View 1 (tube, rainbow, N blue to C red):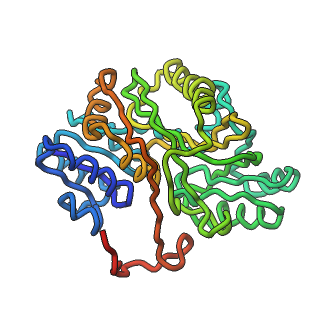
View 2: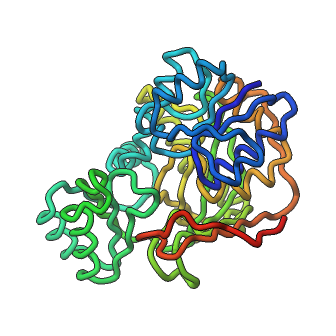
Length: 353
């Protein structure tokens, strides 16, 4: 088997490590990869958003399966492009990926199908958004509508803080077009956790639970990041809470997919806020979480390559998922200035296995 993994982060490193353990995988590539990934896969110097170059590479190398790690290529339609060219690829198509690439699309979908989440309004006009926010109870949550690498969300505890963040999104355009529309939400109280399901469009296969920590500093202080660490399983998701997630969220979401004619395949990340065993959705992502992929993939006892392959082939029904009876944790080290303005290009040294 020849496998291509698209992406360059810790998530893609974990995927490459897991896939490389399957003896049928003879050639493993990662584009664009990173220094650590080079230990388990051959690095391909093609950016994850250069879809046509990735397609040419996959066709020339006769890649048997492409696994897409990050959200950007999914939102740009890499799955549609590869399938059009008769290549097997893991991930949802461009339309389905709006569940992550558009906060408004996601919230409207949840509202339509009765999925528990925060109340919300969306705005494209700065003055209208500001007026709404200044009448909203505190704390208030403001989100860039588009993709922002996990950094386009802020829980604001004062109106000054909210107005400054609104201005940075809508007028200063710190996330470019992603902040031209904003979603303003009520604050959800509780404890956050992450829940993932694999699906081939027919079978739904839930994974074990995990929890990541988004704030930069200890004690939930500092700005939101792409994730500073994660562990699995998450104690807050006990058997009763897990059943509630499946019945109140996963079930209605996939019923909605059927009614809308959405052919969703790949993995659905459900970011949750849990209080008194009752879950509400904070957000959907259309790919593995980073860093949650790292502890989850490490704990999987089953053949992980087969999980990706059977999902893409729409043969997930026969897959048996087994877990190690253990805990796993990953810690993220970030360069100075992250997440606002990182110092890039430094050397990581003095690490031991």
